[in-house]
Amino acid sequence: MADFARPPSTCGKFVSYCRENQSALAWLVVFCVTGIMLGMCYELLDIHAGPAKDETFLTCFIGYWSQFLVGGLWVLRKGTWRQGKWTGAMVLALLASAVCDGAAQGLDFIAYQEAGFMLFTIFHSSVTLPSAIIAVVLLKAKVTWVQWAGVLLVVVGLLVTVFPNPVKPKNSFLWGFTTSAVGSLCLAASYPFSELVFQLGASHRPAEEMACFLGSVFNVVIFSVWTAVYTVPRWNEAVYEPIINDKFYPSVPWAWASYLLYGLMVGLHSLSFWKSVYKLGTVPTAVSKGAQQAGCFIFAHIFFCHIDDKECIDNNNGSGLWSRMQKGVACLMCCLGVVVYALGKSRASPVADGEKQGLGQVPLVA
Image 1 (cartoon, rainbow, N blue to C red):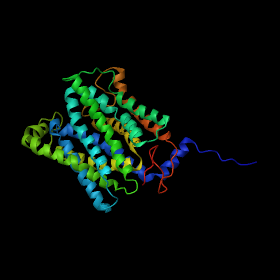
Image 2: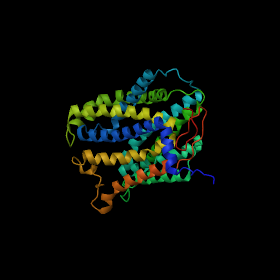
Image 3: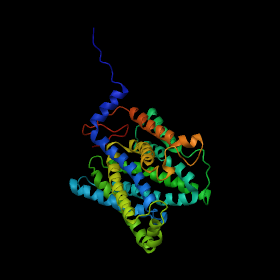
């Protein structure tokens, strides 16, 4: 009797995929871990540094300079500054990614000031879905129905902590709604535009670290000018006084240590973002935000619950049962969404150099 081999299970395919793509997944892990660390850095800034007033955009200034330095140092380390060839279309895609990312920072500030926390959070939490939609339309990314279910689970998980809290705009609801929506759309669009850089240069691609380095230049200039014109003349009242007046544990050394750690994490997060977008694609990178948010809830509870009860996983600004459950439910749904997406990946297909495409993304030369 013929011995027919049993077809591999979904879990078996996934394990095989992980073994074949260890480097790509390692960068995605770095992206997730640094994303969680960024959340912890914000907590440190809140505890020791105020932090600086939002209108200074100090964290943006530090973050983009860190991306510039980490990307540039990685280029020097790898010697990849001459790799590939930049075409006009690729430069435009890179500029579009940078402009969208920078614009999202400015619009998010306006949105928060006008719309308040709830309306801002609703839009900001849902960027995974428009990122996936734009990737499908712009990049022809292949996403299965099971993967769409995973994307929706992540989005719902991120939104769980918002409802049923009422939306109470600080100032103008219309202006807050508009800036929240446009800012979130810009942030979502920055992901597929980043991948488009590599898709346009499939036969002569530049190094991912070079894209990271050059992608920071536009925002380094913009936020350096803002820092010189606005922040520096108001340094005492906008940066130093929030440290001294911090409601928890004001400390100038701890404040600058927290800013330094934040900058390092942003640089590594940016580099791993470009590596992940190239190696795996837009959608898996965006979906991993679910794991990052779950990690932020868990580690904020471990390290900061004893300092600020708002960081406890069983506290979401309410005393009812649902308020105590929201963060836990959000963690479970986000993690479940990531797992469902990963297990629902479409079968990988060969690309030009014999490697496999990412978790359901368009083929890219690696």
